[in-house]
Image (tube, rainbow, N blue to C red):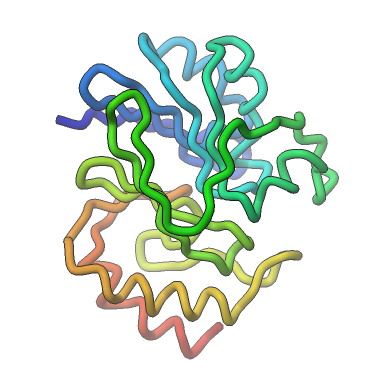
Length: 198
């Protein structure tokens, strides 16, 4: 049984998630001003999971890591964004404990956590599958996709990632980095049209 708490944080209303499975809690994408809400709503946090390295998804990494003494998991190709603040946003630097490479299935305190690599929005952009829920970060949103006109974005990678997503057979629930939840089947209906706009 999975329990999900969600709060849009910061000026970009970035969804921070607290995901509870078998008594273990995962903090996904703690962005700007997420720390107090997370501290008020967790009892047994075991890890911080980043879908990608943009500042509005990792801003509170360091504070929460220090407060709870828990590890940070980040896609390897986006680690540089956590360390160097490439967009000069004043992002507090954080150091991942685990650098996730590509599609990688992890066991964290007995819970299966699968990273699925969907680059394009960022070099390391990934979705995180826990139970039957896909936390898609800024790869896809309800009826939309992540932007590919930022520094370090790659339009061709995004096209390849959409084609990869189209092959998913399970109709997972999808909880994105911004906006409302959706499903794999729902997004598979509209995603092919985006291939013509990228």
